[in-house]
Length: 216
Picture 1 (tube, helix red, strand yellow):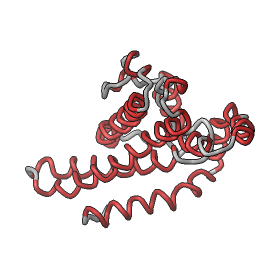
Picture 2: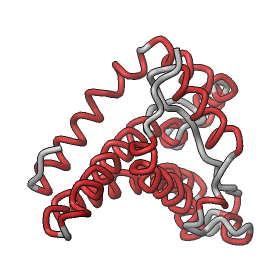
Picture 3: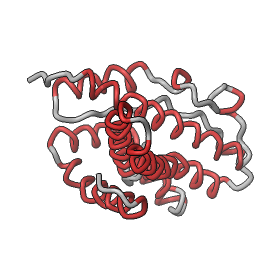
Picture 4: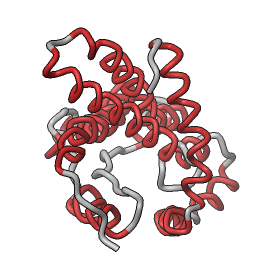
């Protein structure tokens, strides 16, 4: 069944979504450059321009289909290109690049929490839309942090876990990668993904609320 499309919600969530995607991918690129790989920089991916990070299928087609046909919203951005052999410490570089994106979402969740706290102090006509946008910003970034930290390849959490594994175990673990997206999609449509993620998402929202002194 098609869901009712709410243009107001779409517009209020658009800015947080675009920021969440672009900052996440740019964070991977900046971390890679710090550890010695300038591939993303050379290909113009160290930018907050969302057009540089949009994947036509993962960022546009799949989210639209899942939003219209399911109670969920699922998608992905174009991965930042990385050449691990350029890292001055390959294992540590891979680990820090993997975690940089999700950590940027965690930081943005707190940033949107602060925006929500400041919303009552802007001109009255902007208070409601800014507050609603901030709430979506907290939720979207909390969801992206938890989703990306799931220990499944090719998600960042899978790459983070892989960076700790010895060579033989890593080779076995990497065999999951071709099936990782399907695993996530199956968990999504069966409802198991929500059950796995929601306690962690709720925990982050509670933490943001307690730190910023707000209630979302």
